[in-house]
Amino acid sequence: MPISHTIMMLAGMLILGLMLRPLAERWRIPFAALLVLTGFLGSEILLSLDLDTGVRYQSFHDLIYYVFLPLLVFEAAFKIDAVLLRRNLFVILMLSIPVLLLSTTITALLVYLGIGHPEGFPWIAALLTGAVLAATDASPITSRFPRLGVPRRLRVLMEGEDLFNDATAIVIFGIFLYVAMHPAEEISFADAAVAFVAVFFGGIFIGLLVGLGFLLLSRLFEDSIQQALVTLISAYTAYLIANEVLQVSGVMAVLVTGLIMGRVIHNDFQDERGSFVDTFWSFNVYVAEALVFLLMGVTVTLGMFEERWLAMLIGIVAILVARAVGVFATAPLINRLPWVERIPMDFQQVLFTGSLRGAVVLALSLSLPLELSYWWTIQSIAFGVVIFSLFIQAPLVEPLLRRSSLVGRE
Image 1 (cartoon, rainbow, N blue to C red):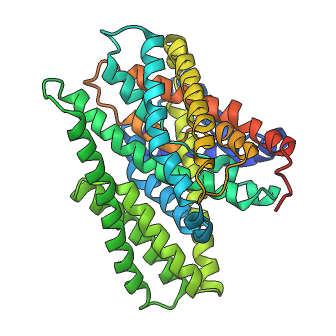
Image 2: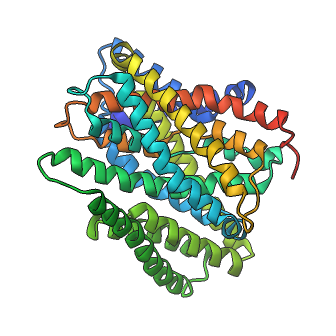
């Protein structure tokens, strides 16, 4: 199918999804879930008519990884409440690094034991699966929090965890993928730890340099459109320099750049300029998220459910168990620390239920090389987990918020 026809097809599906959005509001399911369903049904109808959608998972990966991911990370960092983030930074980092590593290990162990095929699905495949499923994405539900009056601290905890989770998950995925692609090379735990520290903190350093550089550049412009373009260019500059040139964490670089630019612009421009930049980024992310989940629906195949349904179920159970251990076992330990504000039980329940999987999980699963014999299994598990998150977990969050009396509290 020519690229013009593919664009027309996606535009038509997106319009249909927008028209159906009131149903998502009525059924209290995320708009992302409706887009996935629209993309899937649309692609199946076209295939039944012997029409090729023209969408391939390779190009889908590049779109997510190089176009959409920097937008999603930068916008979240740009708009997050910097004061609350700093106040809860210790808790967020605990959830994003040690708890994520623990959850990755538990997920890998359960998937490995559940599949029970050491030759076709070895330990490194299970570890890759754990890393792919590690990144959380609460944006489909936290976007509704201000309208529901949910406490801002809960939103900052979830969005802050998402930000740092993405960076940590991508770094450990890269390490495990290197191990999988070089089976003859001996890589010790110390080597892996050093690589993690270098990539993670290297991204922070690049983010600081790029953020401060573009901060000075932004002082040269007064127009709101120019300010918005400076922030857009800074996001992609940080990501590409870190990820492609220096081989460090591009997500971490974008995160730090977004925090710097957001803090300064929101402090310096309390007029229409700051408001326009916020609106500009809301538009960018709205389009990016809509296309991500619409394209996901297009790339989902019935074969995944027919051939890998058991692996999907194992993956879903594994992430739920791992998340339960990560939240409910570590939160009491964090609450014992005298300098940390407690995480109440109702917050813990939302942190568990609202730990959705989204764009980063899709991007990582789609980046698996075809040389790995188990790539299809991991990709099917990832798609199954994302669908479960959108259609099962997400609709449970609002009733949980109401039952816990978190709605209307702020």
